[in-house]
Length: 534
Image (cartoon, rainbow, N blue to C red; front, side):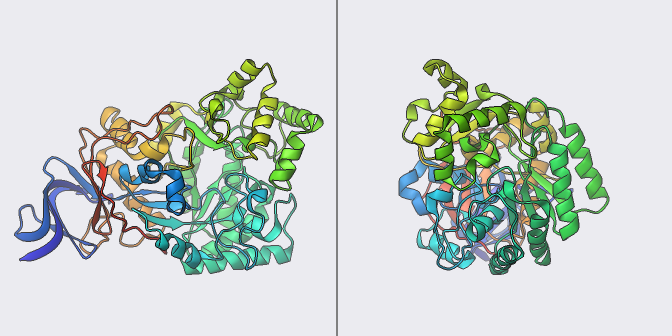
């Protein structure tokens, strides 16, 4: 008779594949961190037997887009709620290093050499760790509840080699970036990411990114991009990404695909058919999406790219100069070639403060509201806040419409990613705590936009295949024992913009590497997670 550490009996197994029989009644045994599928009621013994009749048993959810690289490293600062919000919603693996920003690699002797001086939210961090191995070791020293994989950030490479400068890389600089990327990918990093709206990524031309993506192509790993524009020039930006993939040979993955801002609403009617055509022609292209009509980013990203050249001290010096602020106002009003211009595509009334650590009274208010209260121009309000916070201000941007979100979510090649940014304090976007239950509760059960099997596949098997997570994302004999048990009739998100860390309901159990890390919606204290090499 088979013996297991954990035996889940009576559940509806949704195995994470796209096969016709992806959902079926079965028992699931866990032993030594691996899975065994059993016929319902098959003879077996276990240290723990759980009756999951009426519940769904699925592979652990894979969040394909996070900015959570340093979460467990600053566990005490962030607090338990923030650290555990992801795993409480069923995420057993997070893909970090997105939007051009990773915590590695760095040139020897330049680890954090520029520190906060070069930090502009996503794209400007100099690597904290020399390589992927050092990054993994740091997390192993402070164990995680769930697993973490990481892309290599183009912005991190560029900052570490060149600094925060607005110019093309020299051949020698590009060669160094390619070498650092090659080493990181060879050590197990999951692919290359860009954030082409963020400095210093926005300073790079297409040819520079092609050269780096060609390194990823040699490993069969994807080029993952926050497009250069997701607003009025989204189609042009998509074509740049397609060109980079075609010229480099790398698989293409478009991060948090959206058509944001009033001038782009509805353009998913054109971008999605374009992606479908490319796939039909043989291009390997996918995307991810979060199930909200608001995004979150840095307040500094609302300013023209030239404002941030030279790093934080240069930015704050410009913001303190009335003449420079007038030039920024003009740039927002008239636009700058190649710049996304979020405010120009929407307005300061759509930009609310998520986190300003030393000015918590501003959190939850829009820049427009603060401007009226203070009797100031909105840009002057934003400038004063950025100077006071040394650039470290995050915002919520209410920039999308629901029809576009639904179209992307329903696309057969889209996956689910939270784009979660766990930062201490403030009012972070509720997606960090609610993304996956929101899809399963609202878009599957309430709206019927997706079948349960399709939604689970997007969250598990499809994601694992895209990012090279072998043996994950499926329930099959010998697969890694990362699981979620939830009630399809009750699962729901509760996190809001006012109370963004409220946990979901309906998640009964989360298993990581064979250990139960969440039981009855509560974390157990188990920390079996590790950094995964791909």
